[in-house]
Image (cartoon, rainbow, N blue to C red):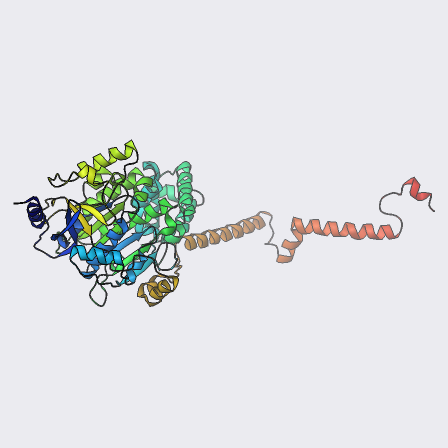
Length: 519
């Protein structure tokens, strides 16, 4: 058997699956495409998570786009975090191009352009379905992790949530939380400490500063109503294809804390609301996080621990998470070990540090007699990648140098008019973009404090009147006795008197001797 025949046999044995699978491309040997060696992706293992890595410009985002299209075709809903703003084109049909035609000819496949059912979403209310969550939905544990609080401060947050539950004070947005925080540290401190124990003023001050820091990154826009329902991420279009939800977060690159807040809440909500499913024939939802290093580089240790825990457990809910980043080393080892599918685009070796990373990356892939992995990683062309995944039994497939299919949708952004058209037709925009300001903790406590102040003022006035043995003064008497009014009266009287005396030659300043000589 020749080397090529052995290669084809190894690939076909490794990438032929019993259940439904989709074709990503074809394997390559010695720089040439071998169309007989197809690289298929089994839908049954898409809940085992994955990694798409590679240097800038090597085709990571287009690979993400291709996989999203294939999932949509098979009635699997997709959620895509669009950091760079170049994935909205998935809602429009692609156009033919000589390079695309050449690629498909090598793959022995037909290129069929097509648009996919898409929903455009936003965290900041700009051009899309506005995603929000209430403070109550976060809960004390998650909110404490986001604010990076210590155990003592976290205990205060837990007490706030308990107090609000006991007294029916809804925590919807950050102004509600701040109002309660201020209340327990001032007017309500005595009431709270009788029931829940002592509260440190320094703890409430620290928590308040942390919340304000979160507000400065735009969190007020995210917290509130109407709260987003995760079931709306798992919708199927009328034609049977899975809807691709494109969350456009191009304006959050300089707001890592807000992005981390959303990510943690989204993963936690998905995990909490979805029932246990085990290994399904195809996943219920697949989430792609583009430029994932933005999460991991800025994340606190608590957030990293939470992401690691959720990634480990959410697989049984039928949900897959795929991280797209420039360098595999950007992903923490504990998370990286949970990723079944690995798509490695080219890496660049400009420095000694780069070469070290490339060597470490090569060691993470299965050994193969057909490639020298460490060298090949730096030689991959655009749209080519090293691929390995888990089969139905959880065994890694052979490493394959793959020429990937090109996206069938547009490899560019939508125009403003196209975005407007999608949002106009969207039922989700109509559902979530209406501003709701229900009565919550802020309004209830404000009214409570106002009533208490009015009652206190009235009691003081009544008590004062009793002590003096007089009835409560009338409104005219109150005005007349007011010190400011008395001062105004005195000032006005002095002016009148000085004017009259001046007219009679008896008032005003004395004339100087020089002035007297004029007469």
